[in-house]
Image (cartoon, rainbow, N blue to C red; front, side):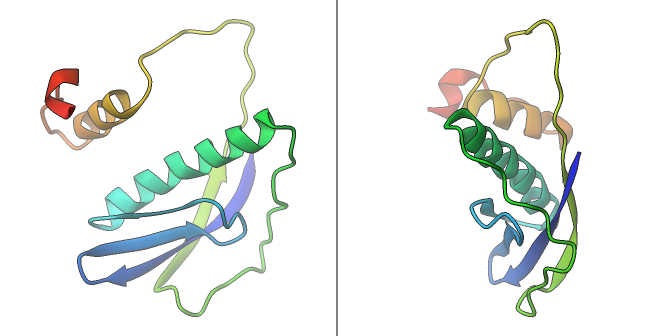
Length: 114
């Protein structure tokens, strides 16, 4: 497990967020909960991409800070290994369905998401 630091900036209409010591992981959300969720997805996506193309992950920096952020908190990147793979649907529909379910919203079918 690697511990990075997430920063959140409240702006009109939502929350901008990024991993301060992993600058490529950046996103925004309508509120803090959505921003946190989407930032975890961004961190995983960027980390997987770097590893797949043979690059190293940025070194976590516990001292990093950004005075422009309203909130800073730890964000954890978990690396796991297994001897088997369970394939699940991927892409927009899967992530939105999973996120909507976590929020107690009705999941959308693939045709409803466009």
